[in-house]
Length: 244
Length: 301
Image 1 (cartoon, each protein chain N blue to C red):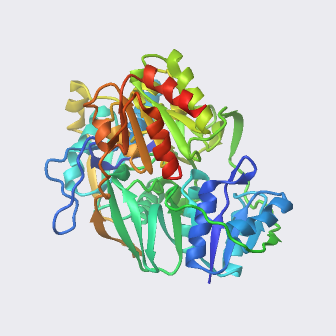
Image 2 (image 1 turned 90 degrees about the horizontal axis):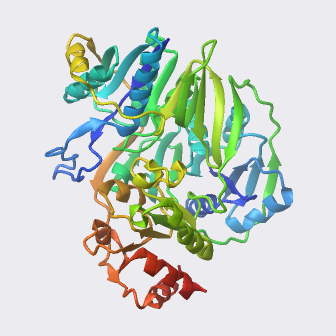
């Protein structure tokens, strides 16, 4: 079985976000990580491979060469090879079209992504890729296991609860905890990763219909109002005044 | 050209998020259409007061061919929808198959050509400009108050057959047993490790009941199994934007803030005056939750 894990490379969750005077993301002093949701997806793929050695895991990122160390980290965690589509991930549509094109050329049974990337948060790349390829897409998936006859059992969260589903492949899944525990590469994995392939592919051209024009920080909050714990009514009155 | 709103239901009524989407749609267009799977004509007729002129009834949002035809036949070029997974999937399909530009986490529609979207999990915002007449706006909740309208609804039934068979089978469904869904709640009562153990959530639930609110928790609490995973709000959990967010015994790590920072009013209750959450709060009470919460419940009675 061929699994593709698509990862984003994003600022660490504790990062302070700022922008330069040229209106670009300010990456100074920012630590980049594999997106936390994709980190779960990769961990689950590696867990499945540990139980079934027929599984082959490819890793894919749309990004520039500064992401290579994170792809190497993914190889050290247990992916068999990595691909990088050599472009800034301009927008969801661009990323989805490039991923779908790659999948068409390389045939995968199971495509794992994160629920969303934590930089632009659109949470659309899995659905858009699924629409381009006419693959069934589930999101967010909190459980994944292999069943017989090339099928998988998954659990996904819906707006009203949780569904347990048996699905045929091919399939695209947007993953979320607790699908697996994050994995930390061990020394042997790190040594092995050095001899695994990291292949760079040029992107397909996409005419983009939207543009991230301007970045700003959210408006500052007003000063906090402290309420004396002996005078809780003040809080209730304040909320009533604001019509809340 | 016309504007379509996807109608999501909450307990057999239009969800507040869809009502807000309809209010926004009315700012963009005189005539606003809706799409629903709901079957009660009496109720659908009443949706004129939410701003609908015409509502299309369909069996299932999965009937893509019928939806596609409706969009083409009625010259729909703008779609406004709550940012929920059910509609994200449908919107993505429309975007790909009918060439619509799609944006999610929309905070504001600035003008005909641009919107503001929330990025970096609420830590920043971006203006996005379009070069396409066809757009889909997936709106964050509570970016506007829904308004009342005085319109008459035309109901149109779309006959449809599902063209494709599912290649999956639902084995089991577990419904979340809560009165108010976290996504749709105006008020959310959230608690963290400061509550010391799962047995202490009684007062949280009582307060939630008093305020008609949903309950939520921080990541360490759901990780420890004190509360179910679907209640976890934060960077890697659910992102919410209620009108009032109570944070009780939650220190306010940056990852938690990222999931709740777009709440309209944040009230922080913590016995540590240096808890970072106070910096993000509108109201703060420094005190022991076990002392303060019963007092709030009391003063609400």
